[in-house]
Length: 132
Image (cartoon, rainbow, N blue to C red; front, side, top):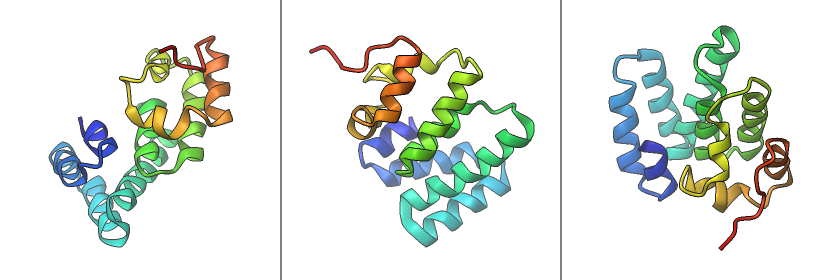
């Protein structure tokens, strides 16, 4: 829900959800608040994505797809695509959903025309172009 709200530019609402979601995790909450203070919503998303990415690298138990989604919210498209590629390499079962516009509107607005994103779709034998 937070990603969808952030994608619609409803940053305050998205931040409220993230604050509730991470309320029990002081480290992520601190990253969220520090990132927001320094660089607004996208800074908060980037700080959380960096922290979760580091945890994923160490433990491997978070999943690559959530990391890519948070980087996408932060406007860090190259990092998002890197994590989509990791999700592909790790056979993430939900990765094919990135080809559907309803999965995350940011995919179509920000990534659909990106050659790297198109290559990830091709690797999965998914359509690059949306049919109207």
